Image 1: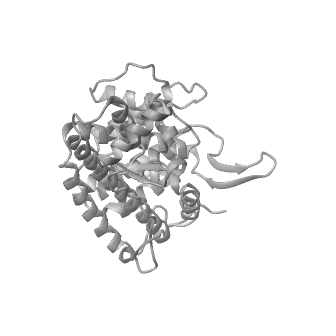
Image 2: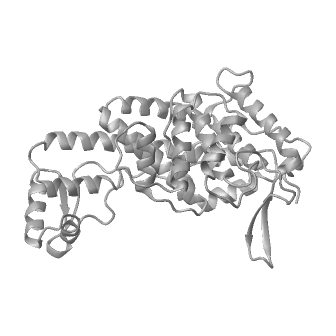
Image 3: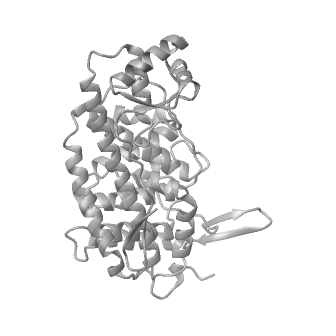
Length: 385
């Protein structure tokens, strides 16, 4: 197999710009909608959005790599670094590291990408992993850097990166490319094209011993934020996790050539879908604030606890709906008290009941916002499914 970095046109990526034109415009419009929506949030809701968005990205970008982290620990670490109140829980190195990287990405999105930034992110991510030789620097090992699946006897090589001896000059060229294609640079690229190329370019070099996927996705987020001129908090990793198999398939196909229209079309659909997911989250938080303002002083502690728990499930709602049994489990209330509380919440419009008696299920009395899958067709039109 001849990989993209082994071809004579590397790293001169090419693509059909016309196929991305509609998607690029849609992303810019969505960025404006997001800014406008966030302005309607109060300080507490903005803090909540920031923490939930960063922690969700931290958890999902790690889950893509097969690592399951503790949500409460990640959020606690993020809150501490943002100077907000915390529960002072002990946080493991994996949760601490990814939280630190997300906060740094959020705060310094406008700064040019540098080797020092990449090294710092790597140190954060791999803190405590003593089996690694190269921490906070590019890899130096003599063994091939390969992405492999299957058994030891019958491995399948999905990709092989350049040898370590080539990494430093390749990364120097990559960092220079990021500077030249940034807003205001000599070769400025639109948001989706730049982020998609940057992610593929970085993953093709695979410069670190570990953590390349998480850092590569952070680079894509940084590129999107720089074009929009604000920390995007786009749910990119969360959307890639939903499409994990096609994500790996698209990357594998793109690693074999430097004409990357198919990859960028796939990435553009994911990025727009991710942005819409973030907009849905912001609108959901606005609805939450309005509901609690309307019901201020009208809820008992049990009812408030259940509503907060349901809102925690996000814009797509409490899966399957809330039952009276769920209510009792969350609050410790007796069946009779649970029924009485639920009837009251329904009468006040906080909940909507579906079904009767044992089959009754309750949903939040605010619009639920499921986000449909977005793809680009051969002409570049956006398709939803």
